[in-house]
Image (tube, rainbow, N blue to C red; front, side, top):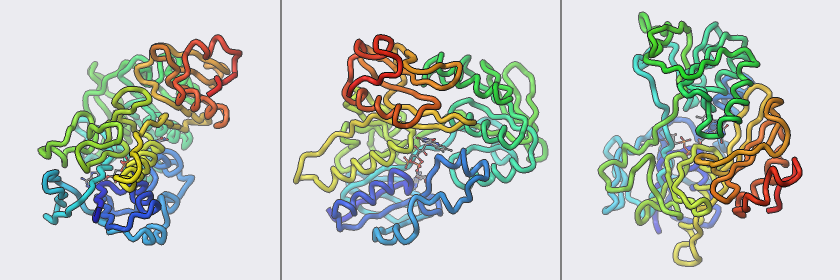
Length: 407
Ligand SMILES: Cc1cc2nc3c(=O)[nH]c(=O)nc-3n(C[C@H](O)[C@H](O)[C@H](O)COP(=O)(O)OP(=O)(O)OC[C@H]3O[C@@H](n4cnc5c(N)ncnc54)[C@H](O)[C@@H]3O)c2cc1C
């Protein structure tokens, strides 16, 4: 195998490149990324970067020297616009065609936007370093911020803005924020944290469009005809997988690049990170996960399989997904696949005190655990039980509070 092309120079793409080298791969690794920065970490963008606690020089995933030591054919500021899976080549926006033996697609996602917001000063999404720096700059002088969407990124932005003393209104279409992801009771407990910190959180509210005058945002118009004034609007209403460049290639696209249990979408083409919707054999379902740890782990798993091709047996990628979020003084951590659960039980602590562990059941099995305000060790002990597909009958309410099941 002479050349691996990786498109997307971030957590997933870099992990794949590093692991290829770490496993002794000596061929060419072409890493293509449309941002001009060296690969950097995104979770701090809506936390330490936005609050000003960190400067941007803490963001790169690796020092320049470490990247250079990998001996990559690094193409930053270059965009892939197409792929020909028969010829095994990727086309870049300037017309260059790069041939590959294996292609790793790690192009992530981009934020959804609201009508009326394009090119308007004061309207922000948070996906890139440049996005976060622009928002941080404006937070210094703004007084009134409207956050559209109470998902994790919107919630983190609201929490930082309150910390900086701004007046914050958060608008969420669902009756209970995050209920689809973490369940109603847990979603309600997290909602209370915002209200307790002085956020005007309004649920069941649809935003119709962004309003502006002379290119400056003035507020948002709601579906009921009322207007919410603002000098900053942060839009956190979900994302689209970056797969347009793969259209027409014949690769399976459906809410991401659809991959099998080995993260393979077609012979020699692999999906990694936020853009990949792969079959996770542990849970017996396709999943697309927008979590930092998953992107790195999937990049490593794909690279290991590439290197051992034809020598050892390939291993399916069957992780217990993990994510965290920091809001106010709360650290939220979760293991497993919480969406589509049938039941949630608090097995330790107290929802109202926002210090608890909740366990999630789907069918007969434990499929997830979410903790707020608990030490990492206490939460980690649930990971093994989820990986072992522990039967629900030996779990929660029936075991003494605070006891994690044996893995
Ligand atoms: C503000 C924020 C906060 C977050 N907080 C958390 C958190 O607390 N916990 C957690 O678990 N996760 C968090 N995440 C999610 C985590 O950052 C992502 O899961 C992770 O970055 C995914 O990595 P990736 O490599 O798959 O994709 P990305 O990081 O999205 O990188 C994809 C790269 O590919 C580039 N690209 C796209 N299309 C092309 C193309 N055609 N050609 C060339 N390059 C292209 C993109 O510009 C980008 O640089 C957060 C994300 C954001 C944005």
